[in-house]
Length: 150
Image: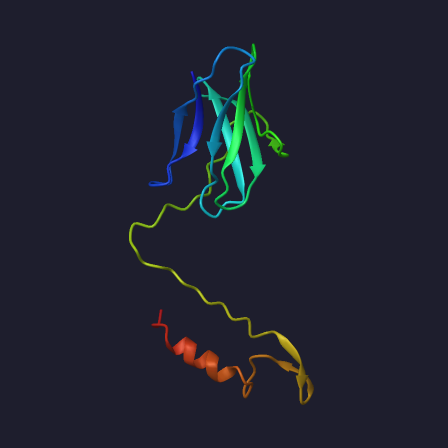
């Protein structure tokens, strides 16, 4: 039985979905979408649990891609028409490095301020952009005071 590894967006787990194919040399197509935030789509086809075809296609976040599948006498071939793709070896892939979706409505926010930037317009010629007495130091202090202590 042919299956396609698919990411379950609700749980973040990989599950195997049956891939119906017709007789030899009759391609079938599926429209797939990369995981949220991903810039590539990996398509993994299994034949009785063993990897039969594995490709990686560059994609824009949120883009839908059409992937075609062909069955040959000894194997299955996945490909993306009109787009370059990387053919990966037919071996068991490593566990995906995916984060599980959030269970609540909280929003994580991190503001990273690099205070090591040098600005060439200082009175001494070059000064730290966020140094003491710089025009931005007051704004930075106010925004840092908005966050609760860790």
